Length: 492
Image 1: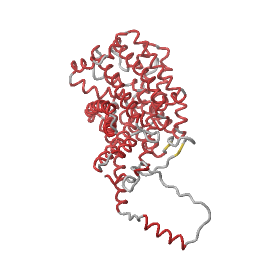
Image 2: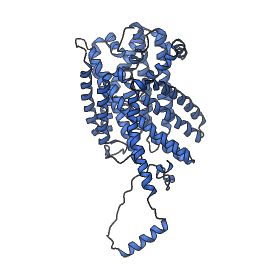
Image 3: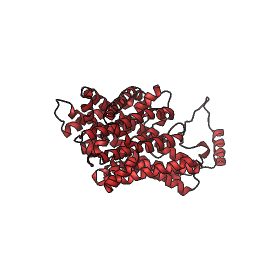
C-alpha cells in the first residue's frame, strides 16, 4: 500500500489535475447542450481507457529493461530486434523526435497546471479577482519552490506528495459523486454511441474539439517514463484508483454543467456550488496537486535525460543520485534550472491556462503516436499478435488526436514545436559530432593491442596493488555490444 501511495504522489500528478481545466477549455468552444456534454464525456471516458490504460499500463509497461521504461527503452528493445541498418536509423530518428516532444511537453505541463490552480483564488468568496500578472507572479513563486525542492530526491518527494495526492483524488471522487447523484442519467455517457452522435451534430468542429479533450490524458506518458522509480506493479495498481476518481469527477462536472450552463471554471464552481464550506481547503489541495503534477513530469524528464546521456545521445551532465538503494532515483541540477527558466517564460508569455491550452496537447499527442508505432513494431517482431492488434488500435487513436492538435499550431502550438526543437538540435549536434569523432578514430585490433601492451608492460615499472578501471555504462544489451551497436550514431 505504501508503494501505491508513493506512485500516486510521483506519477499521477499531471493526469490527476487535468479535471481542473479540461472541460473548462472544451466548453469555451462548445455550448453546454445535453448532446455536447454527453458526447464529450463519452470521448473522455474512452480516451482514458484507450491511451493510459491500454497503450501504457497494458502494452508499454509490459516492456522494460532493468526495470526502466520510456522512449529510449523502446528504442533499445527495437534495436535488439531489427536487423536492417536503415530501419534502425529510422527508429533512432523517431526516438530523437519523441524524446524532444516529451521535453517540450515537460515545460508546458508545469506551467498550465500551476496557472490553472492559482486562477481558482479568484473564486474565493470575498476576494477580488486576481489580475493576469498577479496570477503569473504567484505561479512563478510556486514553481521556484517546486524546482528548489527537487534536490531532495524523488524518494523524499513521492513520500511527501503521496498522501496529498491521495487526498486530492478523494476530493475529486467526492465532488463528482455528489453531482452524479443529482443527475444519474449522466452515466449513460459511458456508451460510445454518444461519440458518434456528437460528431454527427458538430461535424468538423467535433474533430477540432479532440485537440482539447486530449488534455484529459496528458501525463499518461509519465506513467511509463517513471516506471524506473517505483516499478510497474504499484503504478498499475494505483491507476485503478486514479481512473475511478477521474471518471467520477468528469461525469460529476458534466452533470453540474448541465444544471448550471453559465459555468465558466467548471471544477472550482462545482465545489462552490456543492460544498461551499470546503472551497478554501479544496483550493489549497488543488494548488498542492498542481505542484505535484509538475513533479511527475520533472522526475520523468530526469529519467529520460539520464537515459539519453547513457545512450550517448546527449552530452554528460552532472547527475546526483538521491537514493542509496535505487540508482534510477536521480537529480540533474542543470536540467532542473533550465526547466524552471523555460516554465517561467511560458507562464509570462501566455498568462492564463485557457490561453496556454492552445499550445498544450500537440507535443503530447506526437509523443504518444511515436510510442504507438514502436509498440506495433515490437509486438510484431516478437510475434505477440494479440498485443500488436491492440497497439494498432491505440496508435490510430493517438494519431487522430495528433492530427487534431495540429490546428493549434497558429494559436500557440508553435511554442510546443519550438520548445521541442531545442533539445532535438542538441541531440543531433552531439550525435553528429560523436559520429565524426568515431570516424576519425583509429582502433587497434585485439592482437595488435595485446602485442603492444605486453611490450609496454615488460619495459615499464609496476606499482603494486589492485587497480580499478571504471568504464561508462553502455546503454545496450551486452550480447549486442559490438563495434556498431555500442555506438548508436553509426546507424545514422
